[in-house]
Image 1 (cartoon, rainbow, N blue to C red):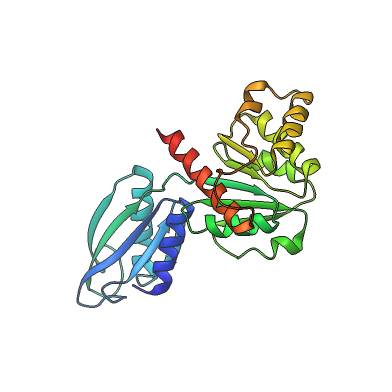
Image 2 (image 1 turned 90 degrees about the horizontal axis):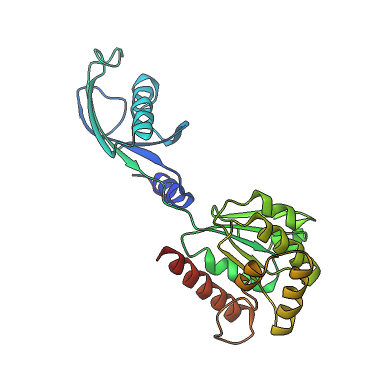
Length: 259
């Protein structure tokens, strides 16, 4: 299997998609590809790889899409290229199909791309999660690494991003200040679908935020759930150690919600 196919499989697994990997495991006579050739098929069809193109590949894709629809985990097919596939060559091909089911994706939204966010996102990218980062400062977004599990959103109105997030997303607000954090928190709490909402800051900032949330009609129930200051009480105040403390808290809450 080529490195490209391996990378694509890993990428798809990380993104939470379901897909089928079809492998040519045996041939007899003339065949359009070598044993070991692979193709990846998603719900909408071809994603990567090749098992020879043309009619045989079309048949493989149809079989893979059938499995994605039925949820069948494995399949084995043996086709005569001439009588079954209607190709001129007369070989026989044997394919093994494996369905890779999507995993629940842990989604995290980080508002702000400043110093702590830079460290936090780099730490989170080592885990199995999907991250969205929004910031009005394109130069800070550009400092973040390019990664298939990271979506960067350049916007002047970060609170509007909240409406695009899937239910169950963990939210960490680490913007340029209270005036930016507050609209994000209000929007998140109004949707009532996010299990974790945290904001960076001191104890004094936390008191101001909770007071302002109450003034804006947010319920006491949601105000009590707010994580502020965000992160576990470990480490020092350097961006790297704050990021580790936040990651620890996110993991702790993720596991608590599973139990």
